[in-house]
Image 1 (tube, one colour):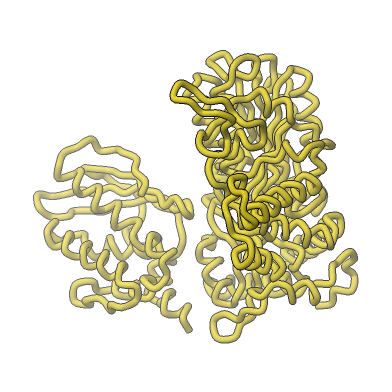
Image 2 (spheres, one colour):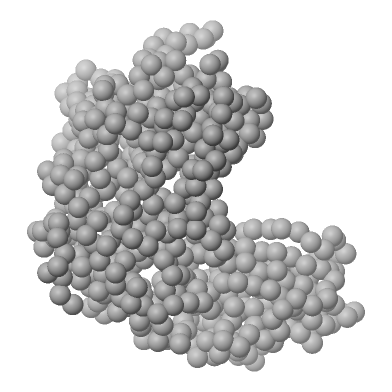
Length: 420
Length: 153
């Protein structure tokens, strides 16, 4: 296959040298073709080195000591917060809360609102609006909040093309709406959502907006000010950082007004046996010893991505995704679940292959060294919507190559022959 | 090579031509799902005294789970409940053997073909889905409990 017609590709030969695991060979010498990036990304040596350097040179607890290591660890941890703030164009570093992952970030928002006073309080008269394409992490926290408060949970539905159906936005988002929580990019369909329209509508009725940017932050420029949302959640491990570190960005005045969720060390101002007062945000929402090394790793990941440029990462993935969609069309009986063009689309492509179950597709691909995700991708309502039990998903990142797309296509032909 | 140890020809045959598939009358019905992959089975057991008179099922899932349900039907229908439970326990033990057991062919017949699957932790649940549903449905049929329940593991 010739790839000379593809434009906007990064120098993947150079980039791949930074990722030790990408040179692995599996099953008697087959090169790893890692196409499960929507589940988690691989880590460059620069991130691994930052983790090692932290533990080998600086390890201490943060915000607590006067000794050298404690000062250094605190500076590194807070330095990572500065890097995140710059990465998402946050107006203030105090708006960046470290969590353990995007699920915790979204649960934190739900619990802030669950315990809030008016005007934020979610109660039996309130409505919460989400969409049918959310990851379970942006469904279940809202179901829990609705069950506990008596609030009503409402859903945007999906079009046959895998896009949000906004035709009934005026019935869904009303004066009763307290919060609208929506994903920026679907982890299953790959759809990039027009959140501006949702934000405008929510603002017009005084509702808050929470954006799940888990599948967006790793892949394109993320600007929380341009989004005009109230909260933005994402996770580190999908963007070259270690597991165990996530981010919740929230507007400063909201973080000042809303109550803490987890209580403990570091989130307090003073504690007496009668009551406590709380530290200002972000520390109010970071009870206990935080994931320090993981935050430092996230800072190193952001340095790595920023040196390449998120616009260039996005252009690379767009080219790879367009090429993959074009080549997947060659495979008989293959049905893409989600947009069938690369327009307003992320780099995750879900599909079914005739009546061959995704588990079997994934197993036979694995035997050829190709790692894909199979199943409902923690987005079961999407599978129900399209009448399928599960999909196979290939997802790309900045180190993905057109040659890996070719390997996937060859692999899928092999799958069809195997079960044919 | 490894792949052939999982996808034995006998498993692919059962997958392509499943035995006993479809729902028929039963004394108890259960619905089990495998939450990791979305595989589902609705399974009914009909007992005739102490004999397994029929195991009928409607299912969707991968080749391993479909073939396993077919083999289950072959092995337990016509047997006494006691014998069938012994086979179920032997199959469970085989699937938990992490590739260390070949299975007792006299007892398990075609089901020994699943020995290779036991090396793949992610697929063991696929192979066990129908068997755990059968165990559950049989307990309900024996206990005379309400016939329709939803369970997940």
